Image (cartoon, rainbow over all chains, first blue to last red; front, side, top):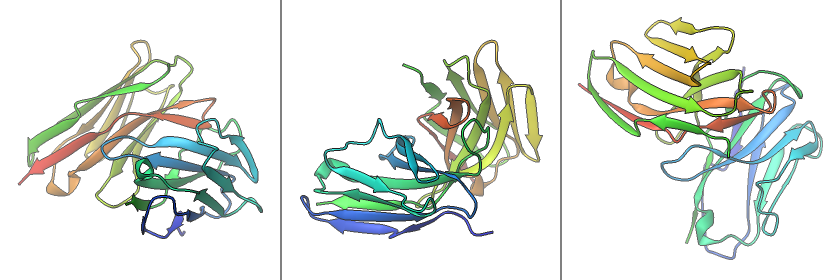
Length: 116
Length: 112
């Protein structure tokens, strides 16, 4: 079974430029998460989707970050414009359960973003 | 606010020795506690998990213990090997399993 796929793996951009990350979750997984992981820290949730609905985006900086999961399968996270402090690893994870399930999250390899 | 505290932040052990990582949580509604291993340049990978109706779970050299009364859970790795070197994260579920609180990570180094 294929795991969570993310692309690109690495991205270097200059500040004020836009950037987008793509995630394809494990087939059949309804729940999709985007996390940001700063160096030496644990993942911090940005947004959670149940199918195509964003059910928790309280931690997403909406002035510059946006996300979509139009068909309830793959998802895109965008930053426009990027700032120096956005340098981090952006992780995508998926979970087979719908709301209320006690299932673990499976992570992709992440996209390492460097903003110069 | 609700969080998970993880200790130590760094741990070095000799190959063959045991390693123990401890976490405490504050949300009494948490019922699911996974542990993730993250190697350099990779995403976190689940290595073991435990649910609140169980006090201990073991999988070969890895075990997890849970004390729900004290809100403590621990990861135990026995007979450590160099390939165990990685960052380990504990987590506790929130919102009925829909989300996790993550610990801050423990960087484990196994010295050959």
